[in-house]
Structures are given as structure tokens and as C-alpha cells.
Image 1 (spheres, rainbow, N blue to C red):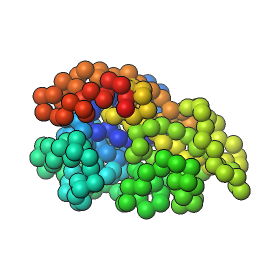
Image 2 (cartoon, rainbow, N blue to C red):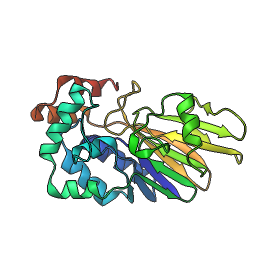
Image 3 (tube, one colour):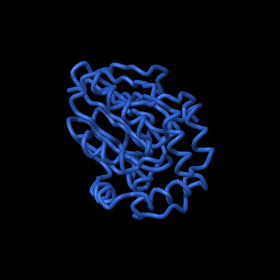
Image 4 (cartoon, rainbow, N blue to C red):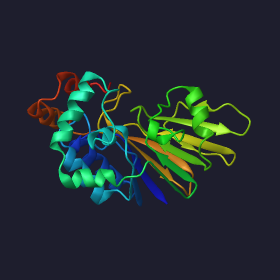
Length: 242
């Protein structure tokens, strides 16, 4: 089975369309979104609809949860807060209903999907340090766990009785004795100094995981955000991937 796994769309329609095309070009058979369909960008309803139509599995992220007022934006920085308050006003009734239907986790075929961490999924724990990865490995039982949330792609491999290892490569074949924690990066707002959209291809037959970068029309997204009155900081950062 070929899985196409993405996360953190953040209302970036041009990036989402480019990733969906890339998934089609790579003959993906099952599509997964790990959440944060909305926030930051200016096309929330369009991105929600694309997810509804194209994703076989879709989870809720922290920005989605705040957008439907399931929780407050108190912990957001001023730029994210301004964007999510705009999003709350812009979301259609249908978009809100769809987001409300989304689960925090999904498990199938030895794979665990979650937006932030399998450690308390609704608390939006960031997996940024090796200690966070250790906690994550202890809280899922399958071979693979796919996460988003940090906007930075990375593959972490773990073997029994060994400390997990952060891998340098973006393509990896899992050994029989290994388990993987994979951050699939961000479609709509990468933060690893690479402005291209990112998604992950999992081939369960070859046991290969590959992080794929996709060019998209960044200027189109930036113009849409300007028209919506989004902060210039959020607009400018897309060009440099930070």
C-alpha cells in the first residue's frame, strides 16, 4: 500500500493543490492529513473542502480546534491569534461541521497517525527533542508513527534497548528490528528553511519512507493573504520557509 501523508496545510490552497498533484503523480493509494487544515493562510474553506474530498483519513490539529472554538487562542502568538480570529469569522457552517467530526488519532495496519504526539494527543505536545521522541515511542505500539505540528520534517529510528536515532536522510527503509517516528513537515508553512511544501510517501511493501518536497506558487498564496489583511510577518516567512 502506498500512503500519502501530509500535515499543517494552514489554509494554503496553492500548496495543498500542488501536494495533491504530487501524490497523484506518485500513485498514492491512501491519503492522510494529520491536521491543521486552517490557520495562518487566507483560504480556509477551500482547503477544508479539498481535504473532505481527497483525504481518506483526516485528523484535527490545534489550529483547527481553536478555529471551531473548541479551545481558546490564549497560547497563540499575536500573529497566529490574528489569523485564527480571522479564520473563525471566515469559516462556513459546513467547514466547521467537518472539522468538528475529525478525530485526534487514527490507527491501522501497524501505523499510528496523530497531529502532535501520541503522548496525550489533545494536549498538542511538540516533539522537538530526543526526550520528546522517547516519550512518543513509548505511547504507540505499531511500527510507524506519523506526526506533524512542528512544521519540520524528520525521521527518527528506534531499536529495542537502544536510544532512538535522528536520521540525516529523507528517505529510509525500515529494518525488521526498527520502529519509526516520522514528522511529515508542513504543506502550507514549512519552517526548516526550505519554502517548498512537504509530504511523506510510505510504501508498506518495500518498507520505505520518503519525505518529498514540492514547489508551489508562493506568490499566489501571499497575494491571497495580503487581500485578507494577514500580518506581513506571516506573508513574508513563506518565501524563506521559517
